[in-house]
Length: 329
Image 1 (tube, rainbow, N blue to C red):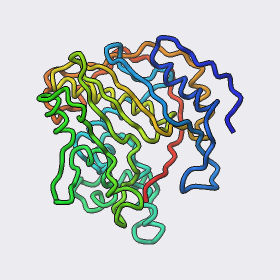
Image 2: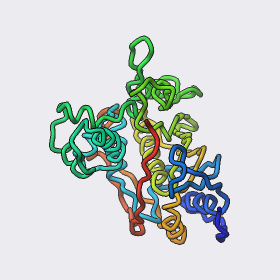
Image 3: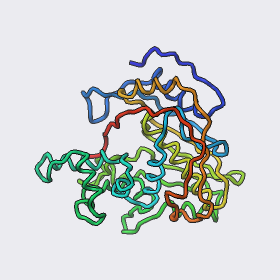
């Protein structure tokens, strides 16, 4: 049941209080529910529905300061999405392990059936890193299916075409910037849950589902609709990732970044993150850092890790929390 915590929603001007207040809202007002498909397990979620936060990108880069956020991983993950990639090999090679559990989940199922050699997750990831990208084992077990980057850049149609939604959106922003339909969707029912053919379901159905670009006053803003939000672990990543995407697209179309608007469906805390979340909301936010992007890059496909520099980031120490691996088939 929701706890009788002190729900003092702060209205300080620092934009990070929006996030901290969201945690307080969930702890005080959320509904406790079992994990779908994992009923009876010890871990549950506490959630509220339908919330929104906003970040003015002219007032600093929204990299949360009340705990250290893994910005190197965020940049590499976003570049991975922009490549249209679905194999964790690129991430593993760059020592980013935020998707390891989902790839290993399916390998481990096969191992328990005797179809492949039993390996620990650490051994499995070490093997992915050791082998070349074209190795059959890497191609088979490192691939997560039709996840975000594939849907953004390589959406497959019924007539065999592949649609690059993001390239289309950028083209429209350059030529018809005031259209109200410049959107990119990751929600493709053909590859989700029971709607997919056997063996074709995504490793995890897209949580950050659809985003829309809008140009107002010569500034580019982006609104994300996130159907499901892991507030403690995932949301800090999502805020920084989509804020950075907004800035990158603004640069390639020749506009200044405006707002990142974050709209939530089911926004929740896992019960094994409650204590960490309580610790975080007691911390005072520090000034947001600045994100510097190499101004020479004018094509969305030309960005490299070295093109980004975070300046002035002085966060509180990290707060650890375990990833809860759910979803997919």
